[in-house]
Amino acid sequence: MDLIQWFAAPLQHEFMIKAILVSALVGVVCSALSCYMTLKGWALMGDAVSHAVMPGVVIAYVLNIPFAIGAFVFGVGSVVAIGFIKSKTRVKEDTVIGLVFTGFFAFGLVLISKVKSSIDLTHILFGNVLGISDSDIIQTIIIAVITLVTLAVLKKDLILFCFDATHARSIGLNITFLYYVLLSLLSLTAVAGLQTVGIILVVAMLVTPGATAYLLSDSFDHMIWIAMASGVFSSVMGTYISYHIDGSTGGCIVVLQTLLFIMAMIFAPKHGLLARSKNLQAASE
Image (cartoon, rainbow, N blue to C red; front, side):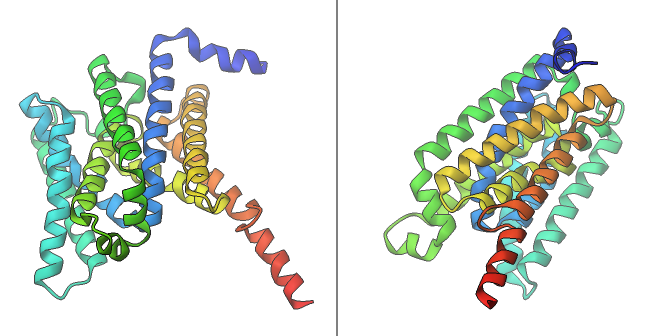
């Protein structure tokens, strides 16, 4: 099969065209948000929220309301629970995060077990972008617009909040508001990622592109563009590869993102392992 045919074959199917476009859109949104998550050091928080939205998604499905509403409520609720337990006990934050997200996730599994005839567990856990419905596409577009517009409008405030929350407070920014804005966007974006890679892998889409771009640039503007480019590339190519090998779409997307990170970790011109090794050799001479 030649290269042109390799790219053209999936486009003969409407479901593949939808999958490729939706995956690219989700790649853009998750990658943009991942830059803020990386700067804030919220990888664990992303893991917590992405898993905590599961019962909200199931309840929203049962009540026949948009997934985003249920995910938003449980995503923010998980963060409130983390903050409450942390402030009222001597348990450290990372432990509290682990307790809360596993508790919410387990609650979601229980709910699914009670309505398993209506909800396919594997689709929630691992995504089902190849079978995405028109209503889910519309929901994903709405989430993408809300997230990208909010990030654009509050860009400067959010960057300062992520870099130095203490300084942000000292100049009059409402860091509590920014905290919950970022977490609200995280909850919504988790729903968008759920459609493509599922709850289990969505944390990779919320962390890996930002981490990759962080190694390749010292400028936040450049970091955003690099992250989105890597997110779109891995999402589109992952969807193509999954079609040709008949494999998990979400798995292929995340594997590609991980490979891009490994390449950046080794070959990044300034912060890569090879560059650091050369700098150490030059310094020792």
